[in-house]
Image 1 (cartoon, helix red, strand yellow):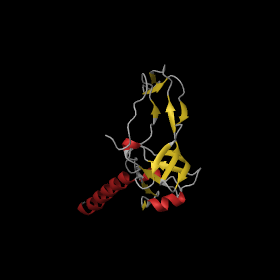
Image 2 (cartoon, helix red, strand yellow; image 1 turned 120 degrees about the vertical axis):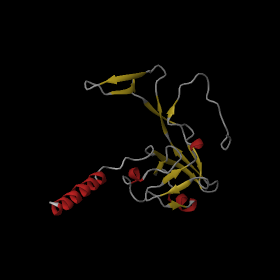
Image 3 (cartoon, one colour; image 1 turned 90 degrees about the vertical axis):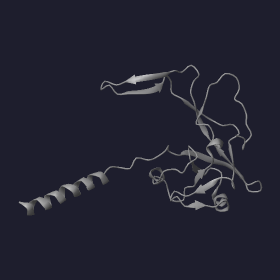
Image 4 (cartoon, one colour; image 1 turned 90 degrees about the horizontal axis):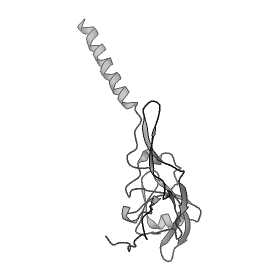
Length: 172
């Protein structure tokens, strides 16, 4: 009986390891945003991107949808619209961090050579590295841009009373 127990125990333990490995990896962090190169000024060392932001109507209120099985999720009352930031999103080529979808760093000069109007670039949504689970979906030559979170463009257009205060880049 002991001779049968050891192989049976080994089979059970190994099957547990296989089951754990079969679970898909859940990406850490938010997915990247898609931004499009509008212009590149090599002399100034700047690139300007077209960025769309979500514009939720000021009269919208959060609504909780309740499904027949009891599942609940929040939504807004109307379909949000997307608007483009009028002046675009300006980035200093040297101050930004560039990489490929393989995670390898690309220097500013090499990135600048690849940037052409109309090129779509992935932008880190939170100022940290984009998880490889997302990057596997894109071609190898896709550029990934990483800037400090304080300098990231808005994700949505907040509806606040009055104007939106200005702040010079680099101020805290």
